Image (cartoon, rainbow, N blue to C red; front, side):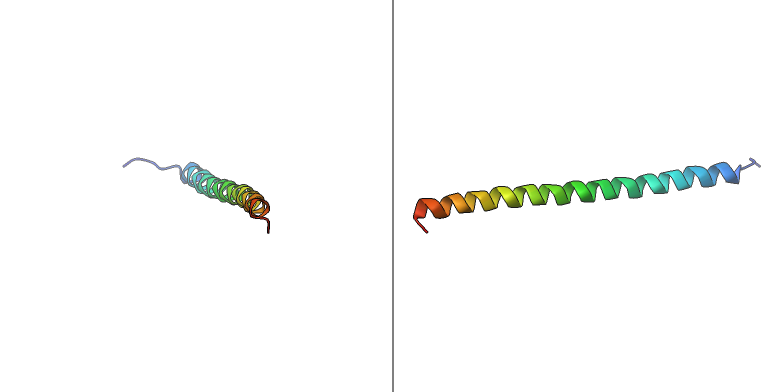
Length: 55
């Protein structure tokens, strides 16, 4: 039977688990920032359209 170093196995699992959560948090922040930028761009376009219409 193969000897298992449970300390190292736990460390590898913990690092992998933490990496997944870190990447998910980074992805969530990037998506949130993209939404803010696109919202400001579309808001700017709607203000420009209002000025063209004379509103």
